[in-house]
Amino acid sequence: MERTEKIICGLDEAGRGPLAGPVTAACVILGAQFPVDEVADSKTLSEKARERAFKLILTQAQVGIGWSWPEEIDRLNILQASLLAMRRAYEAMGCSADYAYVDGNQWPGLPIPGEAVVRGDALVSCISAASIVAKVARDHWMLRWSWLDDRYGFEIHKGYPTAAHRQALVQHGPSVIHRKSFHWKIV
Image 1: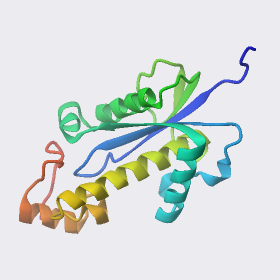
Image 2 (image 1 turned 60 degrees about the vertical axis):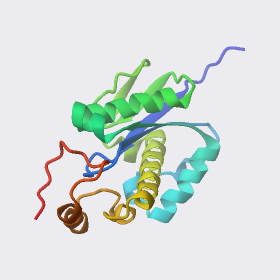
Image 3 (image 1 turned 180 degrees about the vertical axis):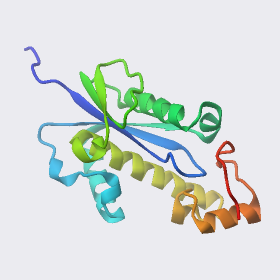
């Protein structure tokens, strides 16, 4: 039997702005029966709603997660590290899609055709799902890191440049997961 329906995946990343931790990307294929009204741009959802959607996506969709680590961000720059994380997410999904939608205006160089969609996380369901997976996976990673190093409050701000985070940097200096290439105005 010949397959007539195209398999479409969506990709998005989380963690471009923080001073610490990885940038995380997700690649998601939603099946025809997936309840797309359960997903939205991760930035518009409460933490509780993101967690609920994350569990639904992991149980009812195909998902790949990719990471770029602080050393890679410092070496490549944040844009190139984000695109690398997207390629890794596509590879981690473990299956081939026919077409990809990527949030933003940059193409990550996937081995399939596709397009970058500005504000795609609000417009394309599979990108919305990827935005949720990337955000929640990264938040979970930062929470777990805070168990290993509780000096910075990562469990609260997830590495973003809050006043408390900047004050912890003044007091303790950078940790091993801080991005050394990011300009920190510590005052």
